Length: 68
Image 1 (cartoon, helix red, strand yellow):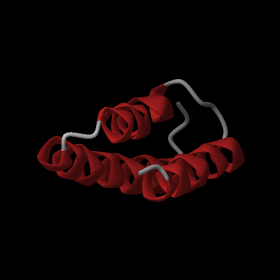
Image 2 (cartoon, rainbow, N blue to C red):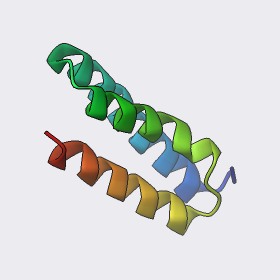
Image 3 (tube, one colour):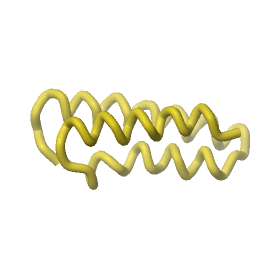
Image 4 (cartoon, one colour):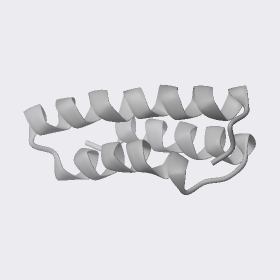
């Protein structure tokens, strides 16, 4: 993980989306959304580079809203 402002902002934004998604998925009892939400919280530690960080985060967020 790099410590430039873009990477830190992406980590914070997508981490918060992941936590909110986790709470919503637990309430809805949706296993798929739980997994996607956990991935949103964990992936910033695994992905390097701000462009890839924003791309993967946007894709996972979109997937969170598309999966029933």
